[in-house]
Length: 411
Length: 85
Image 1 (spheres, rainbow over the protein chains, first blue to last red):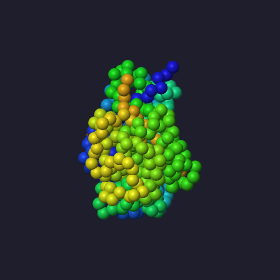
Image 2 (image 1 turned 120 degrees about the vertical axis):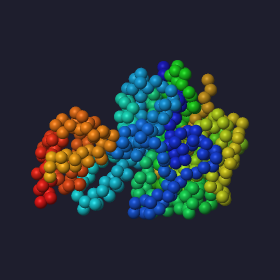
Image 3 (image 1 turned 90 degrees about the horizontal axis):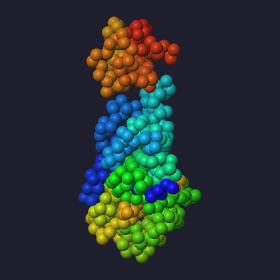
Image 4 (image 1 turned 30 degrees about the vertical axis):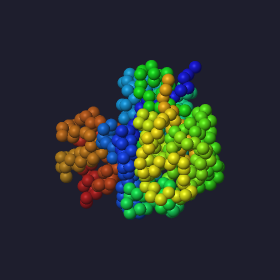
């Protein structure tokens, strides 16, 4: 019988404020946000989270040119995760590895670029690139990683709007439990800042953040919040069955304790606190935990006026009388990394298992009364007595909710 | 336009689409794929760049003419002349 205990053995990431877990964590503890102003095609200046990882570390220049930004992010994160998980990759049977990446969307970037390109040729489609299809197939970022690493097991993406980062990790966990693979690259990827359409869509929806200081534009829970800062990024975890990880003395960063994905089956864009409550409770139930056993809750809150209120309502409903549960938010530093958000925000909290510190939420100058949470960590990090369980929320459009619980590893 | 001129233009395109390649010693008579890391998509890139930069069309049945620098220049020189005429 297969070992159903699934552990995290490696982690690679790129965020606007860090290209490694240590750099990212350091900036989260020091309150260092990193949002820039991009001159967006057709729109002008917009705040955005831009990653500055070294793509050429793992790709030839031609591969970068022919591939996608999402592919480069996936390759960088996967290679970094592989490196720090300590697996002897050369001798590993690559047909037993799988790649499972959550994405919010894919293909907008290349399609917009191609339309822009042919606009310079009077919309003559002879000038439409033959690279368009391999760049825009929905499996693209996972497929580019497969080619780069020689993975001959399954690779695909999981489209789950902004719940996708958690969904990728959950998918990897499930495939290990089913015995489909022995080693999974799982997480979330986003190239969203390369497409004006996402910015313009949020703007039309009244949900795009504006602020004269880009580092203060993403302000979940603050009364002055006015929308989302779109960011790119990625976080890829290497997942293994516990028995395999122990057999090779792998580093173990945490264990998957429980999860749940559910659907609002209601409004396309407005969140639903009742379904979010159900999602969190189901994840707790799967983990066999009571709410008060969770030490850190990383909120999804994106800084939209309604979204933050709905999530806080759901969390207050679940975490009543939980004096040892602390809440924080990562988007206040890096904006909303879309398909990468769940995986990236969880990553920023993983080191808390070791340093027993809850990184704060920043940019809350005046807390919205409707966003009050007990033990919401604002401004400065908080040292706590123990961190055994981290719960990570990620919600997305069309009413998809995901909740993932990670446990500090103990034998 | 000389053979050297045509081959230089092709090499400029290859330098753009395959920036990792060392083009300092490409043998004109040897197939490009035998001396450079070029795949079928790269040849489509060459075709696209000829279209964009020089308004030259290379129909699919003529792709074999792009095999080496020598065959490129032999095939492309009349086309360069006709588009500049």
